[in-house]
Length: 70
Image 1 (spheres, rainbow, N blue to C red):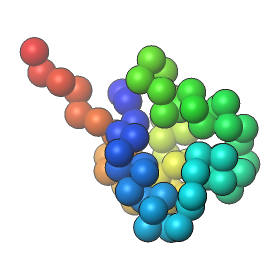
Image 2 (cartoon, rainbow, N blue to C red):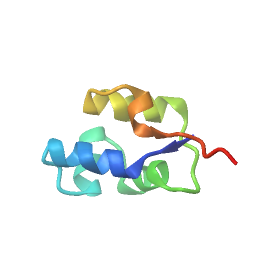
Image 3 (cartoon, rainbow, N blue to C red):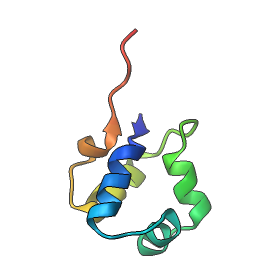
């Protein structure tokens, strides 16, 4: 499971959040934690996905990327 960074950026723009540092502060986590959650190499735990989705008022399914079928 990966978080769709483009969707998160869209949601940040809608809430007028300028950068990841602001978002991390609003979520009560460090910038490094947020970077890890949004990283391609990191599989976020379910609670992180739910917390991020709740913050933006969307379903967790709205912010995760579909697994690519190969």
